[in-house]
Length: 164
Ligand SMILES: [Zn+2]
Image (tube, rainbow, N blue to C red; front, side):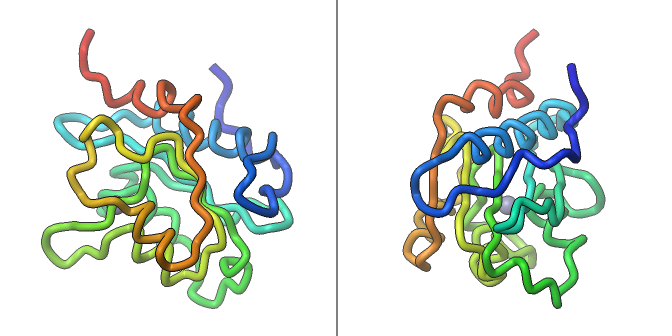
């Protein structure tokens, strides 16, 4: 299997219509998850944040550091002065969560408040695996363009199937 490549897949699509670049970047996010499975009951997700010119701004996967969720990891490495976020697209193998226990902020809110323009995911509702509200709905109602590419659902769920 190829390593997730830092090579650009191209500029994200301009609107709600997924492009080849969108599919390429989502595939990178799915590979990040697949290469970093999570032990126990946690979900493995991969995230790539891409500026509107196709520059990769950040990437992350679940449990990469003390932060549990891939989106937190990716946004954690971004400077708060990163102006390119406002036009960016977030590729997340699993839909961002909308509810969390404790002090941690839901990933959908992190994405919304960053001013991200589009979010592309493989799996809006990973078979009930995300019992954390509908992050895509939260983003949609905030005016973010949300796109689901179900053809990547299998790849996104692969590291989350704990059968032999
Ligand atoms: Zn989350």
